[in-house]
Image (tube, rainbow, N blue to C red; front, side, top):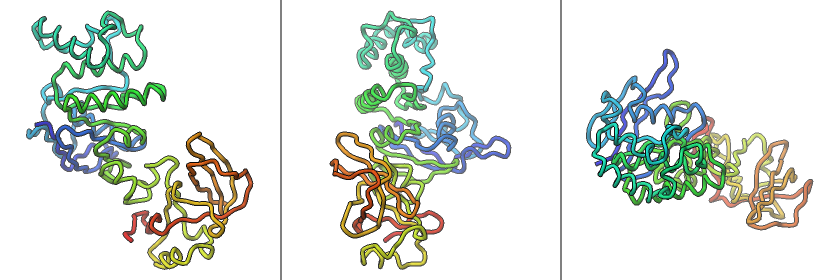
Length: 344
C-alpha cells in the first residue's frame, strides 16, 4: 500500500502560517500535483511529507502507517529535487547507486538495479560520465534513476523540470508520466506551472496562501472552477472575469441579461475560447493580436477593461478594429462578492 492521507496539516514559523490546516488524500499509484503560485505552501507540504520539515499540527499517514513523527529515512519515500542533487565527483553509475552503497546492498544486486534503472531512463550509454558532461535533461534522468533503485513506491518531486528549456520540459513530462505508470508509483509533484499540472496529473490540489482552494481532476478544475482564483489560475490565456459594473450589460443577449439580474452576482467569467466575434453583443476594440499557427489570441478592450478571445483560425481582423463579441449562456460563470462561484 502506498496511499497518502493528510489530515489538518499545518506549519508555522513564529507568527507566520506557511500551511494552514490542509487535508487531502493521494490514492495509491496516482499522480497528484500540488499547484499554486510562489509562496502558497506547496513545497513546505512536500517537505513535511518527506520528513525534511517538522509538522506544527496534523498527521501524515503513508501506506496505512502514521509517519508524522518518523524520521525521513524510515518513511519509505524517495525524492527528486529541482537541483538534481548529484555528486559532481561521481559518475552516473556511482550517483545512481550511492544510496544502495550506504545501505550496504550487495554489489551484485547493486549492479542489477543500476543497469535496470539506467535502461528505463535511457542512461545505459552514459554510466561513465560525470554530471558536468551531461545535459540538464540527462542530469534529471540520473536523479530519476536514483529514485527508481531505491525501490520506494512513493516518490515526491519538487519542481524537477524548472531548470530545463521548454522543449525538454515537454519531453520530460511525458517520460516522468510514463515512468510513473510503468512502475506503479504514487507520485506527489510540486509545480507552479499549470501546463505541467494539466498534462500530468490525475489529481490537482490547488493552493493559495497556505490553504487548499480546490481539489479535482484537471478537467474538473478547468470546467468547474469554484472561485475566481481557480478560474484564472488554470487556463492560457486565463478565464476572462469581468465586473458587472465595468461592462455595458444593455448590449448583451436577453437570456444573458436575465441571468444577471440577481443582486448576489459581482463578476461574470467566460473562457477566451468561448467568446465569438458577432454582429451584436459587447462592443470591443482590438488591442493586440498573437498568431500561434493553430490559433489566434486577440486582446480586446471594453470600457478600458481588457479581456481575451481565442480563435482556432486567423480571421481578417486588424489592430484597432471595433467590433462586437458574444458568448453562449451555458459558457458563462457567475461569481459572488467573495469571488466564489455561484451555482447556476
